[in-house]
Length: 121
Picture (cartoon, rainbow, N blue to C red):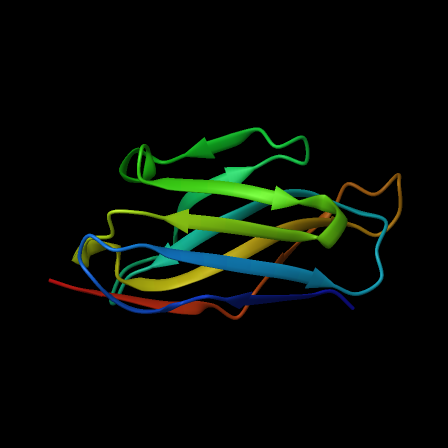
């Protein structure tokens, strides 16, 4: 089956940076869109950034100008560079990927287990 494993979370002070990585492994034909979501304490999971297979990115408002999403298709990996972190960025960051088992497949979304990011003021 497909597994997504996040890494790079941690504890940082406000204004600093972190880079998250998420690698997909398993048997599949290709990976379509990949994304990063955040779940703050007591809140619902929300989209942070999304990237198509061709590298086209999308960001939610609070990520614009601070976060950069990229991917390496050869490594089946997506990255999230987070700059100028603020306490409100604290939460568990999950990556997702739409995985195509076959070339005709519409794709199935898979989730990682999450990486904790804590930003102190």
